[in-house]
Length: 288
Image (tube, rainbow, N blue to C red; front, side, top):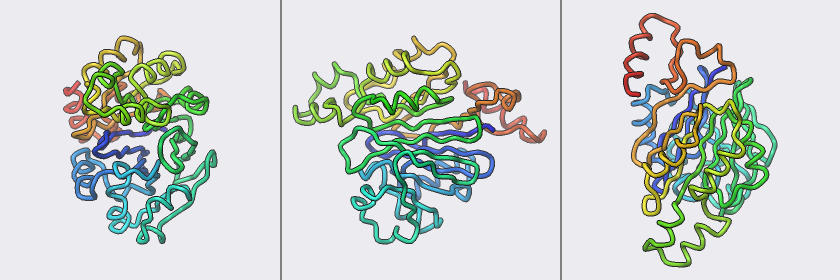
């Protein structure tokens, strides 16, 4: 079964990632306001009513800003670990909370979501992989270092959101104070371009069709730099830089190639089942 994936926003100003099939979907993090989340979902042709869960990676504001409003309006379950919940402190969330544990898969419809710990300066931060039958998507951002668990799960992915936060030279020569530079690069902060690239080159699967580079620093990175760096090593993987200012396209990902015969790799993830849909998909393909 194909999965549709999109970044609604990616960066220190807000993070929210969409993963779903043709019946249900989830958000990883909710760092945009409720109104902005609705606007971007609408522009992508995605329905809020399809969202059946919000999984929270950690408590920083760029990952939870819109959580309370989204949950109150749409009555969406929030999947969160106990340590992170204590930091979020959202009394209005309690009725919707589903507690999760490391390495224990959670089933949402036909989606299976597995949380696992990561290195980051938060209470109990986690990354996630999402599976639907033979298709696996990873969401790996806010990571201080590529630990063995990250390598293990990344190597299973048909698509991944992977942090490439900073260029080392730009960070070291930039205007940030030294304590902040050391926090970013100190093993519990963020992945550099070169750390992410090494993970990509060394541990990607041959079937990794899409890589969305995520959580780029505004001050210490450049989208064109990251795009060039990864495309030089991309082979058959489509590389996309997820923007901190707007949503990405929706991409179709599948571990079963026959399901995507009607839509080339990288195209908008709209199943072509009716004649009236064909024109819409072809119009979107002209964007590439």
